[in-house]
Amino acid sequence: MKRFVLKRIGLALLSLFLLSLTIFFLIRITGDPAVLLAEPGASKADLDAIRTQFGLDRPLWVQYWSFITHALRGDFGQSFYYRTDVFELYMSRLPASLLLAAAAMAFSLLLGIPTGIIAAVRVNKWWDSAGKMFALLGLSMPSFWVGLIMILFFSVYLGWLPSSGSGTILHLVMPSIALGWVFAAYNMRLTRSSMLEVLGSEYVKLARLKGLPEALVIGKHAFKNALIPVITLAGINLVIMVNTAIVVETVFAWPGVGRLLFEGISFRDFPVVQANILMAGTMIVVTNLLVDILYAFIDPRIRFER
Amino acid sequence: MTGPLLELRHLSTHYVSARGTRVTRAVDDVSLVLDQGGTLGIVGESGSGKTTLALSLLRLLPPAARFVSGEILFEGEDLLKKSDREMRRIRGKRIAMILQDPMASLNPLFTIGDQVAEPIRVHEHASRGSAWGRALDLLKAVRIAAPESRVREYPHQLSGGMRQRIVGAIAISCEPRVLIADEPTTSLDLTIQAQYLNLLRDLQRSHNLALIFITHNLGIVAKMCDQVAVMYAGRMVEWGPVKQIYNSPAHPYTQALLESIPRLGDSRKRLTAIDGQPPDPSAPPAGCAFHPRCPKVMDRCRTEAPPEFRVADLQTSRCWLSAPGSR
Image 1: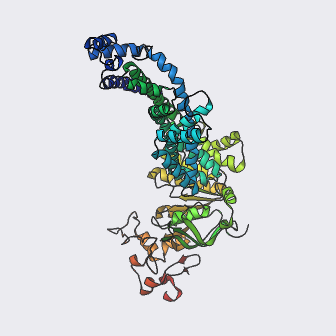
Image 2: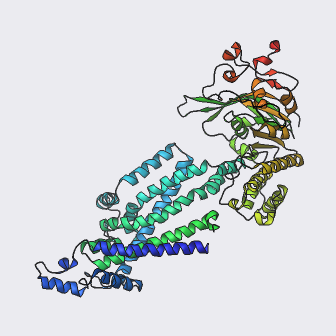
C-alpha cells in the first residue's frame, strides 16, 4: 500500500511539471498582452516599456525558470490586468467554484446512481426507458444552452430563481443543474451497465442461491461491485467539471475561477491563466490520487497488491 | 415423511426468445426421483439441459425461461406453486447448490467469514458472532487449514481448491436436504479434484444429504453416484442405477458415451467418438433427437419420438429399441 501510494505521487508530480511547460508556452502563442494593455495607437517605445515592466522581454527559458521557481513557493506573480497578487485573486474566487462543483457533483451522483440501479434492475421496462431518455437529453444538450433555457423559464417567465450572481442557495440551483446534468447522465449510464454486468456474475448467482432477500443481493453483493467504476469516473468527472464550469460560470455570472480564467484568456493575462491552469491541474492530480487510494480501499485486490 | 425426497414429474423448461419466435426446449418432459441420502449423477454434453434442470429445481432461471409443464415435488410439495418468499426460504436452507467456477462465485469485496456466515444469519437470524463461530466450524469441516486467519481473508488470497471448498462450506452451512453440484471440479486440477470429491462424499454421509451431481465425466459418476440420468438435447434418454446402466446400457447414446471413455489396460487401439454434432436445441431433428448420430437408427426414429420405456426394474430408456415388442 505504501509503495502504491508513493508511485502514484511520483507520477502526479511528473504530470504537473509537464502541464506547467505546456501552459507556459501555449498561452504565449495567443499573442502579445502589451497590445491589449497599452492605449490604442501606443508607440513602440510604450509597448517595449510595458513588456520590460512585466519581464516579457527576457528570453523564454529565463521567464519559465522565474515562473516555475516562484510558483513552487506559491508565488504566481502579479495579474497584468487587476494588478494584484494572482494567487490571492485565485483563492478569493475558488470557494465559489468549489461550491458549484460540489453541488453539481452531488446532483449528478444523487440522481445518476439510483436511476442507474433502477434501470438495471428493471431492464427494458418503463423506468429503464425513462432513464435512457433523461441521459440522452443530458448528453446531447450543451450546458450553456441548458443554462440559458433555464434562465428563460425559471427566471424570466416564472420568476422563481435568480438569473445570475451568487449568495443564496437559490442562486446555486440552476448553475449546478446546468453543470451537473451531463454528469448525472454519465453516472446513470455507467451505473446501469456496470450493474447489469455485476448482476450477471456468478457471485450474484451464488447470493441468490443462498436465499438472500433481493434487497441484500442488489444492495450488498451487486451495488458495491458496481460502484467501483462509478467512483473512478466521479474523479474524472471533477476534472471535466473544472473545464466546463468556465462556460456555466460565464452564463450565470458565477464568481468562480472559471470566469477568472475566461477573463484571463480574453486579456492575455498570462500569470492569471498560468496560475489558474496549474491550480486546476493540481486539484485534478490530487483528486485522481485520492480516487486511486479510495479505490484501493474499497477493493481488497488492489489494496494487497505488492 | 413418506415418499421420495425429490420427485420431478414431466418437467419441461423452455427458453423463449425476446419476440417469442424461437423456443428452445432446454428441459423436455423429464421425470425422476431422488431419495434422501441418495446420489444422482446427471450426465450429458454441453447444452443438453443439465444446468437448466438444476436451476429449475431452485427456480433461479434467467428471465427468458418458462416452466411449461410438470411438477417439482420436494418433500411432497410442488416447488412451482411456491411464492418467491417461500422459495427464498428453501434456497440455501433446504436445497443448496455449488456453482461451477470457484474463482467467480465468491464476491471479491467481502471476507470469507462474511460470505460463509451470510446464509446462517439470513435463514436462522443468528447474531454476527454466533454465525461467524459457525462459519469457523464449517471451514474446519471442509478442511481449510488455519481457519481462524482464513475467515478474515478475501477470496483472491486463496487458491482455487480452497475457494471451491469455501463454496462447499457455504452450500452446507444451513444443513440442506439436497445439494446440487454443477460440474464442481471441472476447473480444479486432478489431485485436488479427487480430494474435493472425497470431501463431498464425506459431507454427504455426515449430513445425510441427497446429492445431485452434474457432470460430463462418467468416471466421476461411477465413483460418486448410485443413480445416473443421461441427458441428450433436453431429454432424459436413460435413467437408472449406475451399475446396471454401466453394465448394460440400453440407449445407443449411453452406449456410445461409455465406449468413448479411455480405460486402463484397454486393448482397443482407438477410442470411439460419437460422429456428428449435438443438435441445435432450438431446432431439434424430428423424431428422436439422437437419430442423425445413432448407429442403430431405424425408420421409425426419424419421425416418431420414443416415449420412456421401462427396460429393467429401475432402468428406463427413451429408445425404440427398448420398446417391449422389439426386444
